[in-house]
Length: 114
Length: 110
Image 1 (cartoon, rainbow over the protein chains, first blue to last red):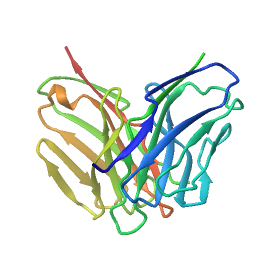
Image 2 (image 1 turned 135 degrees about the vertical axis):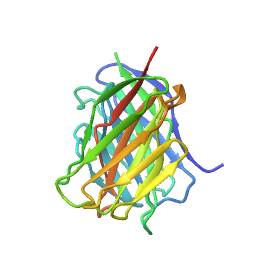
Image 3 (image 1 turned 90 degrees about the horizontal axis):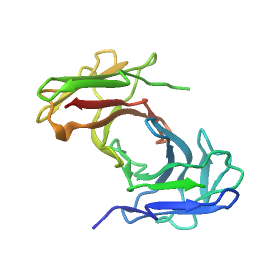
């Protein structure tokens, strides 16, 4: 079964701790993305990567870091520098060729910082 | 940068009534995608439009792309409880990023 997995589904952390969210895809997609969604709001891009070992900041990258060491994996670290980290985090992937580049999303991770 | 304005933010309907959401841009769009996000879920791709004046249907859903390729709409006929969720439009840019609308939340009145 092809798709994107994110783990964990729910995550609780104490203020001041770094936390890493997992995102894995077996769709053979080159591009991967991290979004943040706050309650009742739209999607805001944190980071994206179009190829292994390369990634770019999105609109709200401050306080976050990523790596792309493998095509299948794009973990996101929420650092203690992120002022308001409680949110719903969505990972997505897409192809980078052709005209149909819809994004496929994982189920998301709900992070709560206590 | 490119922006996409989506209206309305919310729409309350009785079950069986129609629903429409609109996306508008000040610049010509090369394409537009539509996604649905169920409550508590993740966005799921519905369709992509690329041609001027294009109209596509998926059962009770009708998607339109304006003649000038600056606006698009999603219309749902005779809403059902399964239609509840937030509908987003998004435009793909040259870097394969999506520029997202703010979404329209469809709420079915009890």
